[in-house]
Each structure stands twice: as structure tokens, then as C-alpha cells.
Image (tube, rainbow, N blue to C red):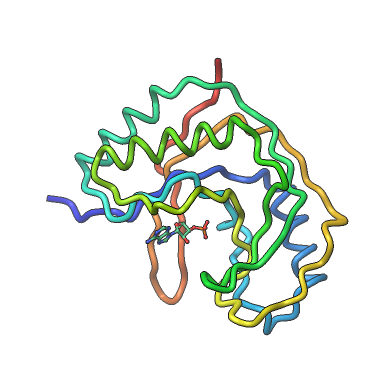
Length: 176
Ligand code: 3AM
């Protein structure tokens, strides 16, 4: 039997947006503010599944493939820090309805298949810094990225040689 994999559903960011975010982060946060998430790992988590068996992965991927909903525009115009989880994040002042609908569907499917889902409401965000244990000044959102979201994907998370790596396993299009 194969080892369980640590899985999550997420949105990938366009590479140009990722690069601009990296530059903005470098310009606004000192190195001691926290541990920067690698450019290739910047993503918006939709649903965290935890350690999942191959059978459950297959079942959840089948359910994800049945989701029918249109894409949406994601506007990143907000930033903040959560001291409890020690992250600095980017997000939206107003989350698109399609984003909430997609995440809620994936989280409900995960819960029905025995993947623990936090009772906390879903706060869509892109983690920029981890281990940000001291309050840092968050620059006013004089920036804004806006891009169409037309796909979502399932990722496996692995940790080796001090590095977290996210591997895309499967992706699906959002369409009517
Ligand atoms: O995109 P963020 O950083 O919010 O924090 C982990 C990351 O989310 C989250 O899953 C994403 C991919 O690793 N994660 C890790 N362990 C988790 C847990 N036990 C978790 N989310 C909820 N519960």
C-alpha cells in the first residue's frame, strides 16, 4: 500500500503576479519580519486535506472534477498579519463569490470524506511570510493585482532537506 500524501486544493497565481508580489514583499518587509514563502510556493489554499490515502485521493479528485462553476476575477488589494498563526498574508477586501463557492464545495466534499476541516470560517489568503511572530508594519494597500481565475488544482506537500515543495497532481478548469 502506498504512503498517504499530504494534500490540498489551491489556486495557482500567474507567474507575472508572483514575481511582482515577490518584489513588493522584498521592498516592504525586512528579513527579520518572517520567513518568506518561496516564489514557486505562493498559492491560495482552497481546502487543506491533511494526510490522505490513495483511495481517498481518487475519490476527492473525482468529486472535484464534477464541480461546475464559472471562473472569477481575483483582486488582491489587502494585506495583513495573523499573529496567532504567525503569517503575513495578501488577500481581497471583498472575496469573489465564485471563490467562496469553490472553496466551500471542496471543503464540504473533504469533510464528507473524513478530512478534518477547521470550524473557522474560510479566509482566503496568500501566505507571504511564515514565523512572523512579532507585529510588523503592513504597508497600506497602495498596490493591487487583479487576474482571472480559470482553474484550480490538487497539490501534494512534501518537506525534504529543509525545504517545502508543492507538487501539482491534477488540475481542473472552471467553466459553466
Ligand atoms: O496557504 P496557507 O499557508 O494558508 O498552512 C498550510 C498552507 O496554507 C495549510 O495548508 C496549506 C498548504 O500546506 N495547512 C497545513 N497544515 C494545516 C492544518 N493542519 C493547514 N491548514 C489547516 N490545517
